[in-house]
Length: 371
Image 1 (cartoon, helix red, strand yellow):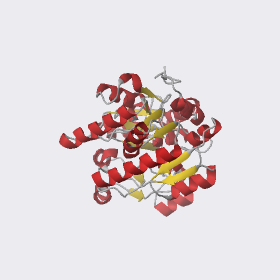
Image 2 (cartoon, one colour):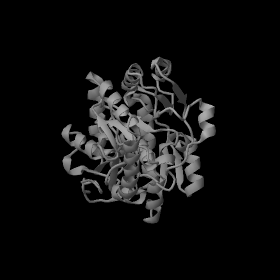
Image 3 (cartoon, one colour):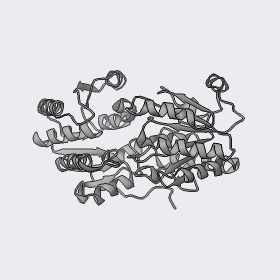
C-alpha cells in the first residue's frame, strides 16, 4: 500500500533515469496496482511488521536471494522492517549505492528495553546504508542527535516529506452537501477534522481531552474522524470517542479523502511522532489550515501563524485553545488556509521533492518560502 500510494513519482523518476525498477514488498493489492499502472516489475517478499526473529531471518534470506538475482546498482528502502532487512542484504551482496529513506522513528515514545532494541535496529540499518535521507529537517536532526547514523551520511528531502503533494488533485472544493447529510453533519456548525490512524501515537488522547474542553466551554463543534481503525488500540478509542460531549462522526479508511476534507473548517493533527505528516500537505493543498504539535516531523509541516498553528504535544488545553482561536475567527481561518495552499503548491512540488531524495549530494535544509 505504501509503495502504491506514496512512491509512484519515485518510480517514474527512476524509470526516466534509465533504471529497470523492481519493487519488493509484502504481498498486497498495491503491487498489482503498480505493475498494471506503471509497468514496473514487482516481487512479493513477506515481512512481519513487528519484531519476529524467525520470520525476520527467513525474510532476510529471501532479501539476499533477491539481491543476488537482481544485482542492483541502487537499493532504496523505506519503512523500518524493510529498511533493516533490505539494507543488510544489500550490503552483504555489495550493492554499490544503498539509500535508507527514513520516514519516521518508531523508538520515539518507546521505553526501556524496547527503546534500546529499536535504537539498535536503526543503527544496524543505517550502518549498512551508504546514505540516510530523512523526510523532514527535525527527523534528520534527531538521527544525528541520538547518534543513530553517522552525521556525514544524513541528509533530507527538500523542503521535507516523502513525495510532496499534487495540488491539481488536492485543491479547494465546495462542500458535498449530500455527503454531509449522510454523515449527519450540520454544515452551519463548525467541523474539526482528524485524518489518520486511530491509535495512541496520533495523539488521540490529547484530541479527546481537547474536545471535552471545548464542549465544557460551551462551544458546539462537530468532530469528523477519518482513517483506518485496525490498530490494537483502535477499538478502545472508538468507544472513547463517544464521551467527548459533542457530536462525533467516525469514518473508516476511504479511497478518496478529498470530499471529507472539504467538510472541515479546521484540520487537527495532535500527533506524538511523525516522519513528516503527508495529511497536513493534503489539507493545506485544499486550503484548510492545520493545528498540529511540535512533534518530530509535524513541526516542519506548518508555518506557525501563517499556514496553521503549532502547540506543544500532549497539552489538551493548548490544543483546545488553538482550535477555538480559529473557530472563533473565520476570516483568519480562511486566510491561513489560503496561505497554506500557496506555500505547499510552491514548496512541495512532487517532482522536486523526489528529485531531492535521489540526489547523491547533501541537500540544504532551508524551506522555500520560509522567512
